Structures are given as structure tokens and as C-alpha cells.
Length: 128
Image (tube, rainbow, N blue to C red; front, side, top):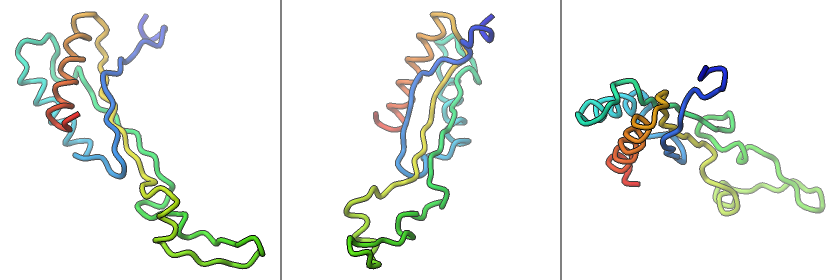
């Protein structure tokens, strides 16, 4: 019934990074599971909370694609801009990663515990 209603996962928290996420996804998942194991007063078990990653980039890895473009002035003359000139007006980070902390649990008690644990873990890990 949950799948038919598309009530599959509940988002508990979001952590955004400019550039690469830290720590790497597999390490973050392990740390969250360990943090969850330490909590003895919860109805949640290891694996009930999961971290998903979303990556946005411009297809060139860590390089800025804007630096490879050819620019022309109003007189249609080719203009060469240095990396420093481009950085003054354009964003420095074109790569972005986001961690979504989710749970499959849907009962009220589990959601309350999961949200509290998520807040504590994010505060401990990232100071937010």
C-alpha cells in the first residue's frame, strides 16, 4: 500500500557541499550506522536510516568549462580573458554534492526518533 501511494521514503535532513562531499558517501553511511547503534533508547535499527547522494557538475570534473570558452567583444573581435578575470564574475564552484538522509519507517514514533537522531548526527558531524 505504501508503494502504491508512493509513500516510500521520508526525508530527514539535507547537507549541501560546494565541491566534493566530505566525508565520502560510504564513510558517511558507516558513521551514521555507528551513531545509530550508539543510541540505545531508539526503536530504529541499523539500516533504517540511509544517506543518498546527488551530484551536479558541468561534465568536466574539477575543471571550469567557462575557462575553455572563446569570448568576443561587441566589435566581434576575439577577447582573451584570464582565469582570474573570469572568477571575478562567475561562480568558483560548479560542482555540487548533496547528502539526503532518509528513512523507510513511516510510523510516528520511528519518524520522531529518526528526525532527532538525524539532527544530532548532522550537528555532531558538520556543526549545523
